[in-house]
Length: 131
Image (cartoon, rainbow, N blue to C red; front, side):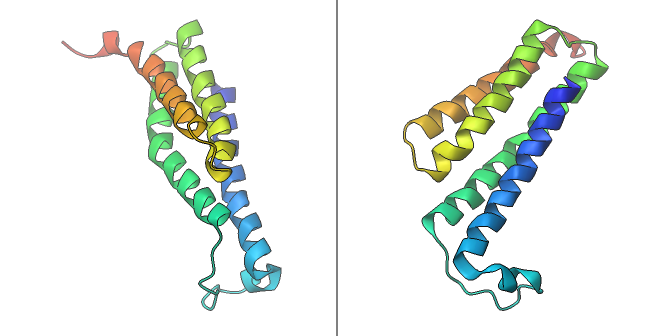
């Protein structure tokens, strides 16, 4: 589980790097070295999509990390939780190119699969709820 958590965090770092890549293509490297106060307002469709894909990851990342850490703490690192975490990781990896390249409906499919991965992680934690 720890390896999958690390790989998801690396994915977040790679996605942030994609933003820099698209900005460099748009405004040049020299503009990005300074305080970025005078960056042109120019944008590109791929830069916009990369920003939204990263924002979307930031929405689900806390949920994934919470569920993954709870599965470790509560001793629920069985096959189902590992499949759920792996499904989340793989679906999020597919989501990035699907979003940036505007591949419909594959972007929505990959997002739904990532949610299924989160649901599998959460399912195993239900017996640990007080009640």
